[in-house]
Image 1 (tube, rainbow, N blue to C red):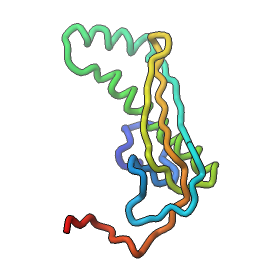
Image 2 (image 1 turned 45 degrees about the horizontal axis):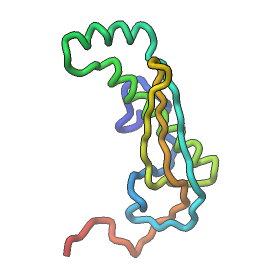
Image 3 (image 1 turned 45 degrees about the vertical axis):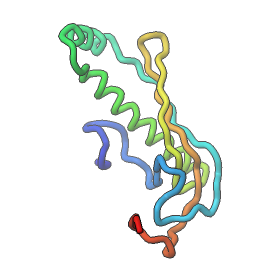
Length: 131
């Protein structure tokens, strides 16, 4: 199982580095390929809507939706990495997520970033120094 992956969820992530920063620490970008994305549209389903509806009456977290969105974001990230791999990238920088609702029963999750080729840069220290 991939670290951070929801239990019983999507396939393991490809061996593609994905970061929210505009660089990968310890690496240098040798080629920028361009935008990459992973998209998934998921229906909440009647059973989850009914269960969540009853749970919402009491207030608090709706765990059915939390689990669904967690799994869906993981799958969108896997698709982003797979797409980047098909473009010839070995990393994605500037990874972000966007979400929207379609027809009040479906959620769209988009993971996007910039596909790049990186190589290890031995001249860059691996830790952060505040000196």
